Structures are given as structure tokens and as C-alpha cells.
Image 1: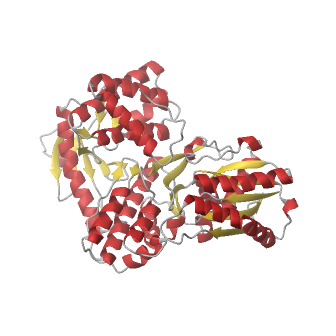
Image 2 (image 1 turned 180 degrees about the horizontal axis):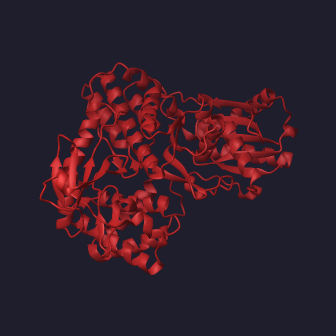
Image 3 (image 1 turned 135 degrees about the vertical axis):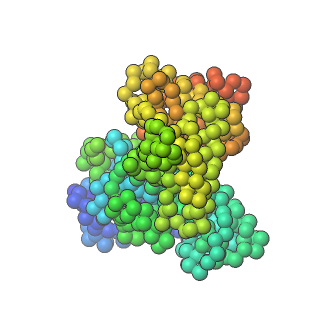
Length: 328
Length: 221
């Protein structure tokens, strides 16, 4: 049984092909890079539309299967940017109706957790999912993935990217901030915001930009920005670990590429005698394979939509989705 | 004896006589904020010191405002320790789902009233979850953790406080979230008096602002 998954919530258009045993046959993608500034939703959507065919063909070629071999479709129905979601959904609906196969709406955040569980063989992790579009601490309990912490405003990846842009670093800012931070020595105090289980990064970003304008050393600022933001992320994740008493911690999303964040989270996991996992880079970032695999899990447990029920949900919450493929 | 290894601190249950004075009786709780190796020294020290000092002040002021809190016996800022009264009872987290609907409503209304007392006294709790509340045999609800609290009389801070309580209900008490939250708000409104609706409106605004709020999100007034 083969599932073709289409991802298109933000800047990445991806097509993955996965079989029912979890073997990834193809994971093709193209990523929109804005000429200047951040992601423009309409331009990203146009990029997806223009590249959908190319990415689809590449996935089929890599997997060495024909489009008729696909048994059903899965696509990322949310959360994400409206125009991008609608473009990916249109591609998925068109393919499903042309092939006359079932179609499944997949929650993007849950797909990140599921592909990580697959590649890392993790059973029941507390997951810190951090990217340019999302920041959540997710753990499974009683039939659903519950959110044990989330940002109240901007995602941490967005905080790093926008800071980078404001101080003149090239897009995306995150990796450059990480490189510069390695040469930072002096800690410049920045607002550390943990509100109960939740986080906030907008004030941190604003203050870091302000301190740069006031003449603070850029290396020191990058260092301080990372240390402050990541300490808050790890603290909230630790609270979820302490509360749920789970013995696995997983880090995923685009910001999972950051070595310092990995190191900090690993130290925390060790203190709680929990295993620590980071999926390979291609499965941390947005991709079609994670959608296809989550589609397989859902399909095997009887989840499926009629075409008219495949509307996109820009603000689809992680904890609104029933997870029949997991027990407990 | 290690009673609980929390995310932020270790809690030890010790004889009063051993920790404070040999003439004393009963037990005390020692809350020790331990160093976290994952964060740099500057952040670690600053967070632990400020939370230790602030928390002990908040305990006292909350009590003054009519909210049961443990008595603080000793604050050791250098050692990042607070020695406080041991509250014998059950965590609200463990009982809330099991109560009969009427008893649950009463308990939630009491919690709502106590949150309102804090807010009126210019305090926000910062971490309103049911694991931080102890229900005693006499039916009192003690708020035992002010580690993330602050003095902040703003509408925004109060709104966030209530929003966090609802979030905690959603993640831990998902079977009874709506009825529990409704009862909490009813107690809150009664105790807070004029202006309560403004706070509740702000909660709704905060939730609409959030990244993951579906459009059909209901209102609570």
C-alpha cells in the first residue's frame, strides 16, 4: 500500500511516497526563498503552484513508481499560511479525484511528531517542535496529542529570523545567528519570558533589536538571544517531562538544526534519565514524507474524508485531532 | 526526604526540629531551586535568585489577601532555599476529575474566588495549574507554588493568568475543562466584583491573538 503525501503549509512544497511499513520511497521538495524580507504568503503559494508538477515527477521518479500505483493521498490541511495550504490542498484533491483514490487531511504538527517516532523508533516522547512557523511542546495523553506549552505570540524560529533581518543578516537568520553566537562571550540580559506552560518571544526579539541599535556587540547579542530563548524552551519542555513522567524527549522542526539547542535539551533529558532523539535533518524540516506516513497511520485506522470535507484549517490545533492509531 | 523532583526545584519534607530549631515540632517543606546545567550561569543564577526572593514575598502577600498559602519560615537567598510550612492534603490535580459534578463546581468556584483575591491584591500567579493547589481536609485550597508569580495589576497579566489556568485544564483535565472553567469564572466574577468582565474579555482577546486558535472558539461571558 502506497501513500503519496503533499506538504505545503509554508515555504516548502514537498511530495513524499511512503509504504504501509514505513519505508520512505521518495521525499522530494522545493523551498521558496523570498527575494527580500520574510515569506510572502501569496508569492509562496504561487511558487508551490509553479513547482508542484516538478516535485511530483521527481518523487515518482525517485520512488520508481507510476502515479497509478498510488493507493491514496494525504495532504497537510493545517496549520499554516492560507494561500499555501489551499494550493497544496488543490493539488491533492485534483490528484485524488483523477486517480479516484481516498484522500486524508493531515495535521502538520502531528506529522512532525509521527515521522520522528518512525525514524527514531521513539515510542512516547515529549516533543519540542520548533520552527519558523510553530513552537509547541507536544505529548500524547488519552487519545490525543496534548499541547503542554506553546508560544503566545511568535515562534522561536521567527524570533531568530526577524532579529537576523533587522540587524542585516542574510535570510534565513537562524543559522547565521547560531554561527555568530559561537563567538559571543559576554551575556547581555534580555527579557526571559515563561508564562506558566507557555512562552513569548516577541518582546525578546524587540529588545535584542533595540540593543543592537544602541550599539551592543552583535556576537554577544546573538549569543544572549539564543541562550535566553533556548533556556525558556528547555524550561517549558522540562516542565512537561516532569509532569508527564515520560522517558523520551524529541526535538524536531527547522530550529532542531541548532547545535546549541540540541546540547541544552540533551542535558535536560539526561537529568531526567530520558532518551533524547533528533530525527535526521530532512525529516526535521517540512516534507512530504511526514504527511504520507501520518496519512498511512490514519488510513489504517479508518480515518478518511470525502472530497468536500477537505477544507484547509489555518489554525488547526494539535489537540483537536483524535489519534486512533495510538493507545493510552 | 525528597518529596518531589519538580522541573524547577526539588521539594524535601523534613522534621522542623532538624531544619529550623530543635524545640519545634512537625514537618517543614524545603524548596531548593537547583542549578540547571543546560543554561548559562548568568541566566541560571538570576532566575533562581529572583524567583526565590519573589516567591517568599508573594506567599506572604497572598495570605494577607485571603488566599491560603504555606507560612514561610526562612528564606536563604544564597542557598536558593525556602523553608515553609507543610500542607497536608491532596493535589487538586488528582481529585478534580473524580469529584461529583456539584462538588467539582464548588471547588472550582473557590479556586476562582481565590484567583480573584490575588488579582485584586495586585498579584498574578503566573502558573495556575491544579498541581500547584492542595485541597485540605477542611476544604481549604492552598496555593503552594508562586515560583512564576509577580506583582502586576495590569489587565493583560490578569488575562494571561486566567488563560493559563484554562490551558492547564485543557491539557490535564480535558474531560471536564468546560464545566470547570465556567465554575472558576463564576467564582472569579463574584469575588472580583466590577471589572471582572473586562478581565474575561481580555482572556478572549489573548486567545484570539494566539497562533492556534480556531475561528469557532466560543466566548465565556
